[in-house]
Image (tube, rainbow, N blue to C red; front, side, top):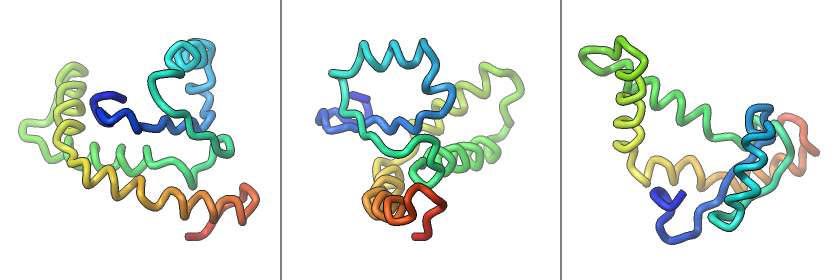
Length: 115
């Protein structure tokens, strides 16, 4: 969190997905709760999760690599390198519409929201 938000204003998006609610993840979040702000919203809400956009962008960049990663460590390195190449501006474009998405989701009472 400090790498991305060195100003200390980072927020953790917890969508309560099953892996995020595991005992290990829950314990880690409790132990590190003072390291970042925790933003709460409805559980498992696809309308509030930007990770799919990030995965798509990472996949696109990694698929363009020449030569393509062949081993798991090559893939890990490619993903890490690609992540570091994302501009903060790109990530900001994913985060900026969140307040609007949140309002839309509240109006839809947790159902699929249009925005």
